[in-house]
Length: 162
Image (tube, rainbow, N blue to C red):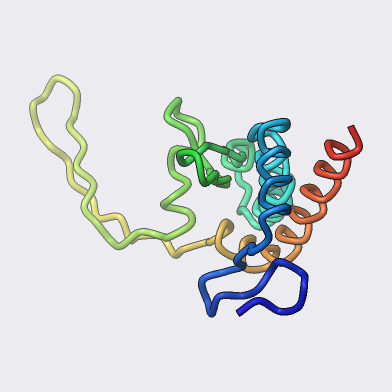
């Protein structure tokens, strides 16, 4: 149910509903003028806060894993976009990030001796989790949202002024 002349009202837990034809028209114009850049920039600004916190939480031995923590943004169709903080890559650097974050159970490591055709087995004791991404998110999510809002406001004000 709309409240006053604001054109915004909450729809239970589903979010905010815009109920103002003029406002919707202006938002559509703004979207055409700006494209997805303002949203991508805002999401990156918010994700930067969490990425930086993750870099402070990660256990450093060689610094390799810390160097692979980065932000990825992508469009999810016409109506959504996401920003992810990822660690590790497929080129060999930090490929073990998930083992650090979640730990490992004890397991058998099988290794063949070169040229002898025999397998050697050894039991790996497992590794305790040393989470760095989840604690960073939990700690900085509110600040990240504030940065996203501030960035959007700043960018849309700049676009609206011409």
